[in-house]
Length: 368
Image (cartoon, rainbow, N blue to C red; front, side, top):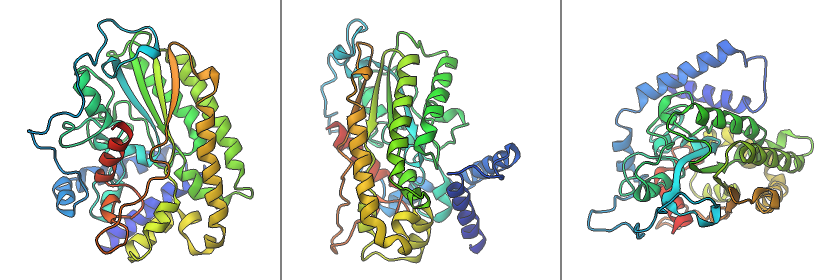
């Protein structure tokens, strides 16, 4: 067991270090790291879902006598609309997602430390397409009720390099500066997919980025400089998507505020949670930076405001392209358990990443 914990801690350190390129980032080392992650996926996902259900970190299944909450009649236009202003849910033919480990669904069903490395992409709120909305409430599973021919959603546990990831191009450890490259990668993957008509299919693309930038800002001599850089990165990313993917509806999901995770640790101390989450986000969770938290919180507030401002730029709103922000989770609160402290069933085993239960509730709040 000690070896397993050490293996995971090593992996977390590698992911953390990946925020900046080092001499270790050779093609051979990256290939080895990918093989290790695949080995963990193949050897630790068995029984994961049953264990997660027992642990109470998955949503309750909607019984068959509960109808779908929306009227799907007329949900798809008789003819393909030529304007985003006339778009209906069923008109979306392609769905995709960009982001970091939240988008990959990292640790979404984790009940032990090794399972944190498993990316449960098929259950991620905005891009997972496993099962149906009754068992796994996700945006694709909602869209599929309106359009059974929807493509792009992730099919199961997978890495970006696996076919099952489909158009979920999120990557653990991703930063704002990675978004332009990720947009180009997504465009290339779409163009190679024979199911997708780039010019005529309507596409829904979600973007969620920020937590890794927040968790590393203490390493920056000028932490607030991440705002200027993010503005440049996000504008560049949206321009790349606009210029290469006509008929696209882009949703920038405003990143949840990390202060809620800090609050959730109060009264819930465990060495496992403390150690792993502090490694994952030292700038906001480590004791040595406690005095600077308020400064960092204000930077995160400005980051959120910046994203809301950028999506309203006129250049990103045409008949065949638009951008909106989904801000309903930016200040989301962690529900309390019966003892008055944070209900950790909304978190993964590390008390930092989110559980499937939280993903399902989040998409419910966004959509309904």
